[in-house]
Image (cartoon, rainbow, N blue to C red; front, side, top):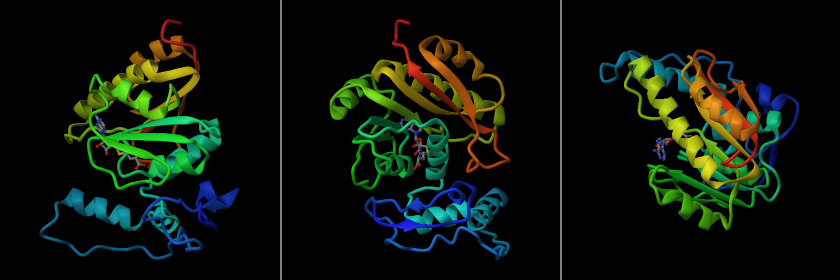
Length: 251
Ligand code: SAM
């Protein structure tokens, strides 16, 4: 932890926000730049598709992107976990955390900064080192992964996070099915490595099919809730399912 900053985002209003402490983090005391009074308008580019132009314009005008950069978070997604943790108190001091789909490392930074002592991230993509966390490149679905991660953690996990998203096809129904399939596999994975009382968080999309995973979740966890953190873009159907109080695989 390297410094205390203030910012004007909803997440920051009630409290001060500490800067991230990982390699490549912003210097202590950097200003957040969270409120941008200017709107950046892009010139038309013949090299970019309309959707690429729209993405770039959204990034340039997104206060969470600016705040993440200023505070040293690897991703704007870091704010989603901060908001979820503020609401559900998921990351406890000394806890063991697994971060599925960890690249570029924003959620792992948050877990470390909020007191987890063992944080292990997995991603298909390489991740620059995050201080206080260990990162491995691979598919979480590899049958050896639960054993590898349990060994790296030095025991079962208290919290399994999944912000995983498959590559999108552009076909909404297909993309929805793919993300739900990923979340269902993440749930299976979590139930293999969670300690009793542990918690699981996964990205899902509104649209109905995630209801299938709610049945096993409700059986194996004491409480299951849905949340859309303010940092999750309003126009997107992304939301998170948060399950706490793991009762064990054979509940
Ligand atoms: N929470 C991250 C952060 O704050 O930096 C952002 C995660 S990003 C939205 C989703 C990640 O899921 C991608 O980096 C992708 O490579 C990863 N992913 C998708 N399928 C995966 C799989 N089968 N195994 C591991 N990682 C996967």
